[in-house]
Image: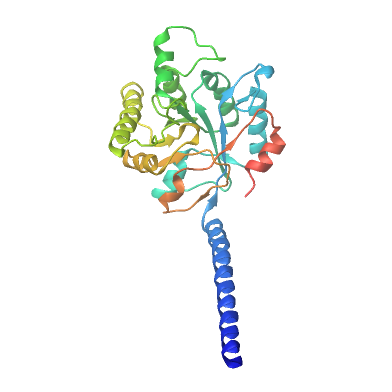
Length: 290
């Protein structure tokens, strides 16, 4: 009996040791994969802005002042960062392009007219690039209103989009035609109980409405998709790729590592939201940290 107990005890100790080794190997493997990703990829921080207003009382989580934007640009310039387009990342990954030593991507969501008013002069001053994501229905309403645009509340018109792209300082991304909402549906996410075929039709009709609008009026089709509010799921991710987009933007605040030849790294790119409540030094230390 004692011999049997000793054998059982020995077996249990061996099993426990093997389990610990397995757990340690998994943990080490996870860290090793992350380190390998860092070693193989280029660190690319992406900053997410929204609206720019001069009125400091309007400053908020998604509203910054022109002065804050300029302070941010000055910080990036002084610390050796070179703003690039999402399409520069695409060329690096898919088409054997090159990236500067310290790339950074500057993005603006929703296509507010104040991006034209306050952002463009700063891009020209610092020779920077920015990626602007527009919402189709906002653009159509602004283009057809006939009113003089107001930086406080207006959106980019088709003529503004053309001028910004022609400058060479801006690329335009698809932010949906009319799915920039959380009423009923959360952005482009598939609703609970909704069939895939029904969802697919709604998604494709919306996305291509904006693609067609920009192709007919601005002579281009965006190849970068920006998820409204960051909401997405397996169905939307699949459709974004099936619609021909070569990259997509999310909102999770994490570093990006861009790996040549690895197309997966171009989708659901992470971005740090630039809150108007943070000062440049504090925000940049967070956003630029590997």
